Amino acid sequence: MIKYVLTKDYSDMSRKAANILSAQILLKPDSVLGLATGSSPLGIYTCLAERCKKGDLDFSRITCVNLDEFRGVARESEHSYYRFMHYNLFSRINIDINRTFIPDGSIENADEACEEYERILTSVGEVDLQLLGLGHNGHIGFNEPAAVFSKGTHYEELTESTVRANARFFTSEKEVPTQAYTMGIRNIMSAKRILMVVSGADKSAIVKRAFFGDTTPNVPASVLQLHRDVTVIGDASAFSEIADLI
Ligand code: GLP
Image (cartoon, rainbow, N blue to C red; front, side, top):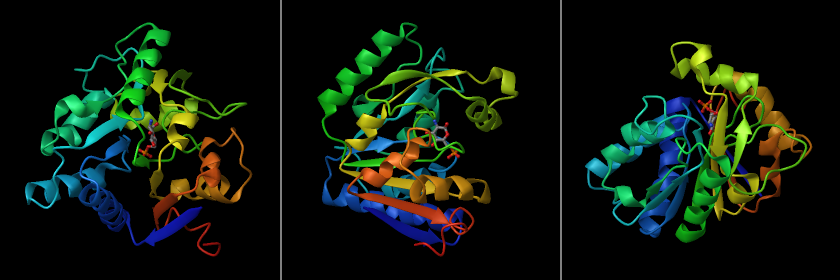
């Protein structure tokens, strides 16, 4: 079942999503959180860090598993998702770094990298709350449009649209890695609860396709229609094409 929360703008969306994550952490201090990168969750991470600093949130028993990482990018690289998570969240909260996990993009051998991450996912157990953003082509994590829904952690060739969307984090589009390791759709769907955040008019068409169109691997996020507990928090621009439907 999908619940929609319409918010005014990015900062309203971020605070409301942070409220849901905060409630999860308060009610289950040893939660396993599935985390995402991209611009959409940044405001949430700032809110969570502020609340932790004030003493309102305690991450000391929390475990975090991230969705994805660029392949061929060293952890120390300024472009790695590892660095993104450490800079934007982990270094700002009282989490035990040994309980934070991100696929290792520096492992060349794809089978090895994916098997290692699957082992980690199995060892941390069920994800209590999985945070997601939404790609312009409907990708979640780095699960690109495909003929079938992916299962476990795997390697993806990124589409042109995804490379272009990620280019804003690099000096030029040519520098954007074209391959990634990502949790699969089965991993994502195994989470107890899913929280997606979407913002901006450029996401309005894909929001409608993903949640009011057919469930198809060609729009990976559409699989969320089959999950029992999904909340989508969007700002007015991202929800403009579904405002009359929710
Ligand atoms: C990237 C990430 C996704 C993210 C998506 C949307 O490709 N791998 O996990 O959800 O982009 O990003 P943004 O929130 O910046 O629009």
